[in-house]
Amino acid sequence: MGESAIGVIRVSGPDAIATVAPLLRPPSSLPDFPSHTLRRVGVLDPKSGALLDEALCAVMRAPRSSTGEDVVELSCHGSPAALRLITLRIVEHGARLATPGEFTRRAFLNGRLDLAQAEAVALLISARTDRAVTLAARALAGGLSEHVRVVWSALVDLIGGLEVALDFPEEHVGHDCVTARATVTRLRGDVQRWLASARHGRVVHEGLTIALVGPPNAGKSSLLNALLGHDRAIVSPVAGTTRDVVEGTLVLDGVPVRLLDTAGIDVARDEIEAEGIRRSRRAMEESDLLLVVLDGSILPSATVLAETAGRARLLVRAKSDLPAHRAAAALPDAVAASIVAAGGLDALRECLLREVERRATAAGDEGGIVASLRQIGLLQALHAALAASDTALGEAPLEAALVDLREALAHAGAILGLDVGDAILDHIFSTFCLGK
Ligand SMILES: Nc1nc2c(ncn2[C@@H]2O[C@H](COP(=O)(O)OP(=O)(O)OP(=O)(O)O)[C@@H](O)[C@H]2O)c(=O)[nH]1
Ligand SMILES: [Mg+2]
Image (tube, rainbow, N blue to C red; front, side, top):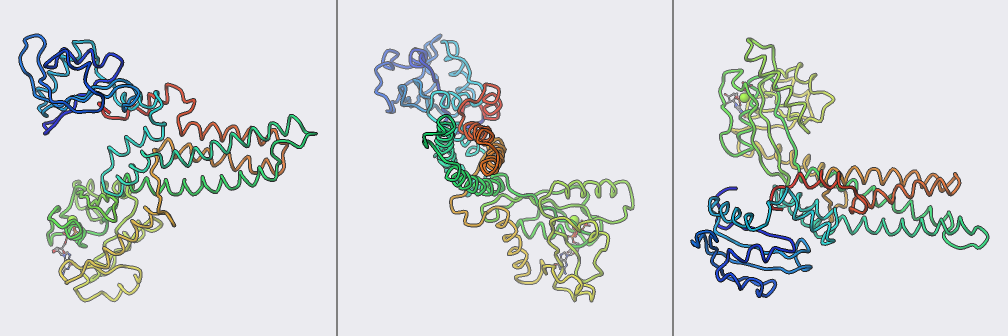
């Protein structure tokens, strides 16, 4: 809880109206409130009769509410103290505090959302950029669910048709293997495309981590500051200025990017530098991309080049305003950058944008997908089961293909929340914030 203009207290359940009514002035009016309208009310302390707040009250009667139950919402002033007091009084009148994600869980259990949409609520709340919001909002509106529902229905139809064919082999009813296989191949291709799209969507949602690494004094901290547009890290002509990892964030192409500036990698002169270099290596480990910064006016560091080889990296020839060292020609892929020359960062910014774009957008990805890790895991399992049934339909007895198809059906169902157990629901909704 923090201070805000408005704080909403939401009560859901069959007794919601009766529970809140005694706190409102006049108390008897709440049961007669028309559904889905706002009314100004006084909120009283039922113990002392003192006025606690002036609020806007809405009643949304079942089943036309977010949870599918009777819901009362009080939009109070956002004082944490007042909100706590009013909540406490409501609890004293028979309500209890919601567990994390409980409102969304009830919405799911009452059929207002499927599980993929319920998870999209959490994705929307944690979205950090416009682009991440757009993806999550699409998922909330049923983007992924719609796709998966189509697969689910096609599988129900296939399994039914193949079972009929198996039970009445003489009658030529149900599905034949050839058309069934064509359908499975098509579904498999669809799932593969969504999977690729969902992996890219994850990058848009979670963002990328990029570490600036290189020898001491190469100009890493200067580049960090220039890219961020403010003086985040200390810059000095003394080699070994940066000791700790310094972090800053920027948004590139709608993707949140964490930039990590690190200590220069070289032979450590003391224990503090040695610890700094250990931290640089840890930062390298957790990064999606390395910006390997080399001072273009001197001989490039062989140590740093060797240590970063084989990792996703972008070589940067820093200080390009200075005369280039002749060995710089040996690094033709390096992007020239300078913090003093006019336009000295344009090429580097361009390259970074392209790298982000490549990781965040699948080819032909207009209708991009964002999915939770659980959903991505299930999409993978669904894809594997479809691939197995595809093969089985070509060679094995029909029964074998049916086993794989049923497995695929179970995975598709699990994405939508059909037949998932309490343990999985506990896990999903425990990641929500309170009050959602
Ligand atoms: N001419 C020129 N000098 C630069 C440029 N970028 C940085 N410098 C200078 O290079 C020196 C080192 O810069 P830093 O950004 O502190 O280098 P660093 O790689 O962070 O160094 P450590 O933290 O010690 O590893 C400073 O004196 C900067 O002013 C550049 O583009 N052109
Ligand atoms: Mg530095």
